[in-house]
Amino acid sequence: MPPHAVPPVPPVPHCRERTPPARLRNALAATLVALACLLVPCGALAAWAVHAVADTGRYVGAVAPLSADPAVRDAVADAVGDGVVRELDAGPARDLAGPFVRDAVRSFTRTEAFGTAWEAANRAVHDAVLHALRDGRAVPGPVTVDLAPVTAEVKRRLVADRMPFADRIPVAHTRVAVVPATEVSRLRTGYRLMDAAAFWLPLAAVVLAVAGTAVAVRRRHALAATGLGVALGGGLLAVAVAVGRRLTLADVPEPAHRPAAGVVYDALTATLRTASWALLALGLTVALACLLTGLRGRGPAAVRRSWTRRAKARTGAEAPSPVPQASPASPASPACDEVRNGSPQPPVVGPRP
Image (cartoon, one colour):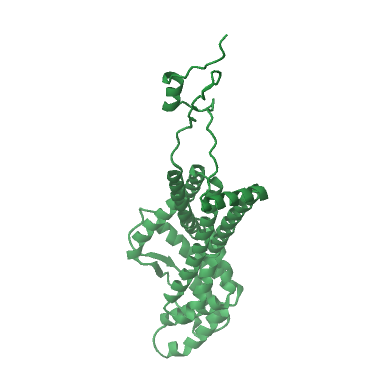
């Protein structure tokens, strides 16, 4: 070594903040995002059940226009006509008046009065069911509703049209069971769970999505994955609505009434279908925005450098690693303490005077 040469000083190890490994952070972020995406369709379903179906005003507003649907009119005319005929005394009077009664009821369903009666009957049934589900102190038993006002309106119309034997139609306050007694307790428990889930599930989905994005090493990728998961949840919700319609129509005992049941199902699930398509569009928009933002941030030069690094990695060539430099703002670590406090530094040999 020349007499005036200065020996190289060993490099000071770079002091970095101790953070969880990238794999652990990515795994945790993926778990949180997956849970959030799973809760999104469940929360939408619970919110629809509580705020759309279980609300009397919204329910009546959804089914009231159906009084003008031909399938609903025919189904109601058959059900009410058969019920009125059964109330008549057995004998020649029933056989003679049966066809007239059915025709009169079918004619009544095409009047404005039927729309009023249809809305009143649906409101009465819905109020009775909600009262049984929300009131835990209700008397055990089936959920019943009195349809005497509807029968009275039908009788008044038949008498005004001078139909034979119309004055013999009894208008008794008979309570019709709409929910069996064995189902009331189960439905009450399910309603309470839905009521709680309608608030907590959407909130939990938002919190989990934000936490997963914040924990991820690459937040843009996590946000894009969240968008794709939300879109997938919306698509699955739309598929569930379609499958539910098929199963509901299959359970209708009378095949002739299935068109009317389908119309009612479509009216009640219109909000849920809109929510499913909205989730699908929102998720795809977020994912596409993240993709475009990432491509815009990576210009042509950055893309070429990325491909060059990948090509070198495949051929086995490694770029020389730069010598780490000590960062004055880095927090202390054991290696830094050793260098700063306990590690002797070699003497610097300079020119002698």
